[in-house]
Image (cartoon, rainbow, N blue to C red; front, side, top):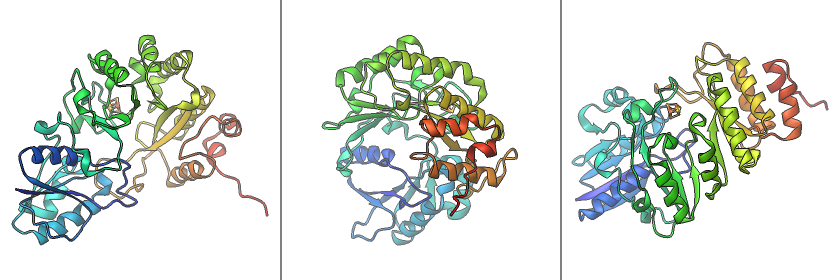
Amino acid sequence: MKILLVEPEKRKEYHTSYPPLALLKLAAYHKKRGDLVKLAKGSSNNSFIPDKIYITSLFTYAWEPVHEVIRFYSDRYKKAKVIVGGIYATLCPDHLRDAFKKRIKIHKRLFKKIDNILPDYSVVPEWDASIVFSSRGCIRKCSFCSVNKLEPKFEARKSIKKLIYPGHKKIIFWDNNILASPYWRDIFDEVEDLNLEVDFNQGLDARLLTEEIALRLKGLKIPLLRLAYDTMGIRKHLQKAIALLKDVGFRGRRIIVYSLFNHENDNPDDFLLRIKELLEWGVVAYPMRYEPLEPMPKNSYVSPNWTAEQLNMIQKARRVIGYGGAFPPYDGLRKKITRAKTFEQAFKLRRIQK
Ligand code: SF4
């Protein structure tokens, strides 16, 4: 069989710095079966005539580039079976079905049979990190998060060694909540033995972070640690986790804390309070704008507790006084935000007098 794997064209709304992991796993699976495999980015002409086409998708707001490649390849290869999977396909199957009827098959959630195989990274030779899941799903049910819809059951595995590609220099964990895994010690042991740089990319759950875990983390090669401060409810846990990490030697500027805003459970005042506290605790605050799960244009949703102007103020402040979209605890920035009495004072930028 001839298999075409398609990643929609990368552009502003369809942006990711990572290779399409599920497609790389499908490449490995089909090559093992003796099939011919080709990876295509966007709509590209070539002489490869596929029997089966897999198309991946990302966030729900990035549906247009997905529709474009479906239209392009299904028109061009009328006899090929077209399978569309990924986040948007799982969360918005009706939106996809309305547009393409029976021409495509929608695959929701994971391809179970390929989840635990080594991806074929040879199709992305410039990439040098192994992306792994040591667990799927999450033990929590945060109302703003899609994980429970994408991976409803929390499942963990004891080993990730066979998912590390020879020659890679880094391991990236995409676990939603690795500290909830009963096997986290086994996984950390393996990472320590492999002696590779590691990134717990989806963040660590501060509520589960103990002194033992902080010490084990310090033994790994971690350039940046990620936590979250999405609601005031985890305040005490987060403050304690940050203190534990600092006690074992992590510098605050190496701890980045994602802070949700624009959800119906938050508002500008509690967002400001969370950002102030993070800067007072000496860590990097990274605002994360909530996007709903429905397919609507990026940055168009405004929660009832916010105004479009307030949301724009944050985006602008991140660009102008922030660094890489974040608010690091630099002296000047920390003072400006922590001394502000109102949201507007903290994030409004003054016009420069000519
Ligand atoms: S803890 Fe994180 S991954 Fe789990 S449901 Fe909440 S936001 Fe999602």
